[in-house]
Length: 461
Image 1 (cartoon, rainbow, N blue to C red):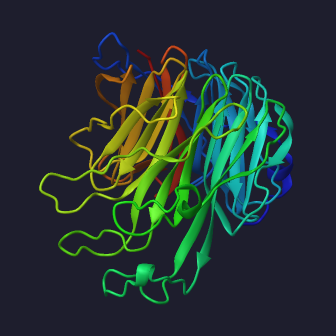
Image 2 (image 1 turned 180 degrees about the horizontal axis):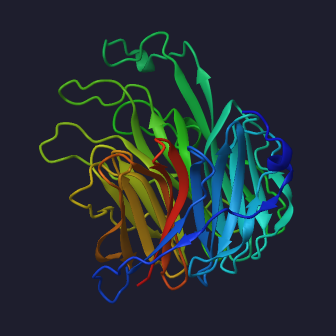
Image 3 (image 1 turned 120 degrees about the vertical axis):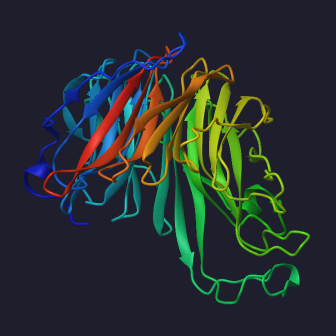
C-alpha cells in the first residue's frame, strides 16, 4: 500500500468526529453481573474505514482501543483512551508514524496501572512494530522494530504485558515452498501420500520479550515440530511440519506462556477404514519464567475429540487464545467441526484441568472469531461470533472455572445484511467488569457501507 501523505501523515494527534453514548435496558441477569451498558463509538470516515481493532483494560476500569483506519490508499494504526464509563479521554493518537503505509492487525496490552503497549504488522516491509504509551496516552519513545529477521510474510500477532510494563510479542512468519514434496517412510499409497509438486506454506513462530523501558531480549524461535516436539506424531503418522497462530499471556509476576497451532501436513487422517491424507492440527503450549527461561518442552493441551457416531477424530483445532491470572492460565480454541473449547491450568510444568465445552447459543452456528480475557483473580470472559458475517456476538462469563449465568447476546444484527459486525475483542478489569468492542460496517441511505467502531460495557461478577 502507498504511504500516507499530507495532514493525514503529519498529524500525530487528532480529534475523533463523533462519540455516541447510550444505555440499553439491563437484561434480567443474576446478581453475579452481566448487566450491559451500550457504548457506540462511530467514526464516519468513509466506506470500510475500519478493518481490525483490539481492546485492553486497566485494573481500575479505564480502557484503550487500538484499530486500523483506512482512508483510500492511506492506512494507519490509531489508539484512543476511555474512562471506566466509556467516555473518551482526549483525542485519537496515531501509534505508527506512517513509515511504511502497510500497517494492519493491531494488538494492545495494558498494565494494571493503565500504561499500555500497541503492536502491529506491516505487509509492506514484512515487519513487526511496537510502541509504548503512558497511562495518559502519550507515546513513550519511538516505534520499536520487533522482528530481527523475516522469512516472507508476518502474520498472527499477539501481545501481553505485566504490571511492571514488561511485555512479550509473538508472531508467525511464513514462506511458500513450491514443488515441495517428501514421501514419508517410503509411503507410496495413492490418496495417503502427498503428491509430487505439492506446494506448502512453511510457517514458524517467534517470540520476543521487552522490559518496562522497552529494552528487548533476544528473539526466540518456536520452531518446526521436528525441533521442539521431537518428531511426535499427532492424530496419525508423520511429524509436525509447521507451527503458526501464536497467542501469549503474562501473569502478574512476569511469568508468561505461549500457545500455538501445530500443523502436521504429511500422511494425516489415516483411519482403520483407510481415511485420507491431509492436514491435522493440535494446540501446543510452552511456559517461561520472568527471566525468559523455558520451564518445559511444548505440551499438547487440546484433547482428541470424536463426535458421537463418527468414524474419525476431529483434527481441525485452530485459533488459540491464551489469558493469564495469578499463577494460572486459561486457553481457548476453536474446533471448526464442533464448538469452542476452554482449558484452565496452573503455572506448574504439567497441564492440569479438563477440557470443557463453552456453552452455545441455540441460534448460533459454528462459532468463529473467538476471544478470551482474564483478570488477576481469574474472572474469565469468552466471546465469539456466529456466522454469517458474525451476525451475532455472544459472551460467557466464568469464575473459578464455573460458568456465571447464561450466554449473553452482546449484539444481534438485522437479518437483512445491513449491519456487518466483525473482529470482536474483549477485556476486563480487576472487578470483572468487561468491555466488548468490534468493527462494524453499516449500510447507509446512499447505498454505501460506513465503517464504525462499536463497543458495549458489562458489569462484572
